[in-house]
Amino acid sequence: METATRIGEARVQYTQIFEQLSGDSRKTKIVATMGPSCSDPAMLVKMLDLGMNAVKFNFAKGGRDVQQEYLENLKEALTQRPSANCGLIMETVGLQF
Image: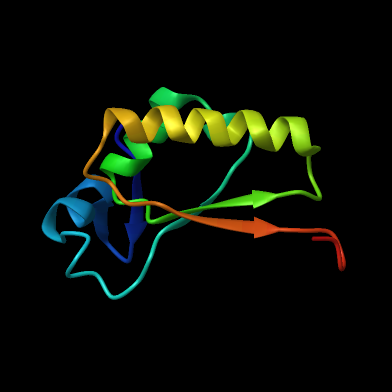
């Protein structure tokens, strides 16, 4: 899956950007919001390989059961990439905790 965009006149491949920088040398972090399009363990493995540092679980969209399924899928992806580190961010609705 090659994703590209045009910046000025240059065609930039996102994979080229990530290949040049290791996770330790980047000053920014990549945070992904969990949703139906990226909750599959295979997709999460790809995202980890491309440098994802944290996952946000949005409890305003989808109940506890949906978020639990997303978390289980993330755990499965992390077992396939034991050297990967991934933070968890929980976004709640209002003052719920």
